[in-house]
Length: 544
Image 1 (tube, rainbow, N blue to C red):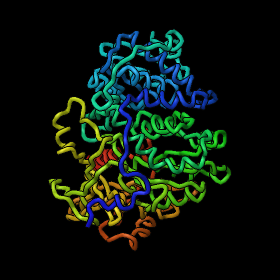
Image 2: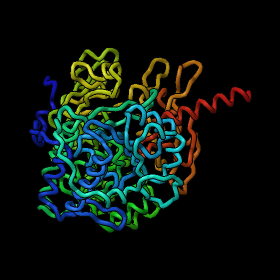
Image 3: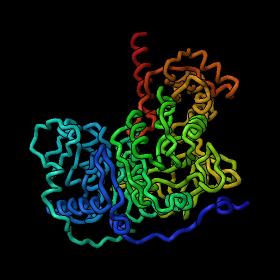
């Protein structure tokens, strides 16, 4: 059998040519062609491509005046806003490297990343100033720039972003950039197994991934005949998924990018009504929240024509509900920070297989290998570790040669995800290797249990983890958020699962919560639930 069967089913080109330019010039080509198109929308303010590029150049001049040189790192600790876009692309213009920071980082995490990256400038929202003070970065940061989004008094003397823009002309120096060698971003991973690691992504990595995404969308875009379209910029730009889908791809379409600083269902409904976006990249929890909103039936979501879902598994039940409400097509995909991040997506023009992550992107090679040593390729239908090779794959981890050697072997990126491939070349993520629950020697992947839980009509959100059990090692515990206005018992949930799962996969414990812990991008935090469970068990042991 052909080991790359997806090549027989490709609805688009399977290999592409990629522009060998900087990320700044990649955006500038579009801005020069469509200078008067709407580029950015934030609250009630709109900015054209011409105005956006002028402000990017102003910020690049400002960075130059701060004494920053090619290869220096800056850190952005911002939600989606004008300042993020201007600072990010200004850095690309000068060959600076952006360390992207989640505004919800703790002081300890912030301190580690700033020092690990050796960032010379920190641009941050006023709302996170308490965290910055707790991190004690005075000796590490040469310039601190504040973006006043909430209007609160930060109590220190710092440069204001808007003042910097006004004080500098849009005439930065020219800097020669080698797109394949020069870093654009240090994309810090979540640090679930210790301190975060800085994923080194080049200009070429990011442009290649944007071009792959555009290729998937190219035929679909023809239906608009060159008309102005808009993209919902809900995904945080500091996350690799938001960076590629919104900050690079959407702006390159060109599409007006609606900047959403944080998820709020009422705000999302308003923005959809106001601007009629056709493109909605999202995460499963966002689709769930909108569909479970009590007022969803009172809102017209018909402008949404295409959604790309990533960052976590999308329950088939939610996919079908959202598509029925909007008439849109949700394309479930897959990626990871180490691959810029997208590697797979269901096709727009070919066969879409709900529950799968689709086929590899153009120029992306994949294998399923044995999860123990990773040196034996497995045939279609068998479960193993997914490994990936392509132009979007990282250069390695910043200052982490040992971690790099584990993740990158002979040019292949070892993802740590358990997957399988069907005979048509469509891939299915079974689960993370580290999330696997082992019951009496049997492997249980939380996702398969969660899929069943989402079929229950009262369940809004569900996450499963393994909890210790005396005889069998681990059993399944489900954490569940119910839909508004309904009640359920643990016994009811367990009984629902019994006829649908093999006996050892049925949850033994069910805990109801009003909300589940999530990252800012909307991924469930299993590790937080595991920590809560460990804490609860310790308390019970002490009390017993």
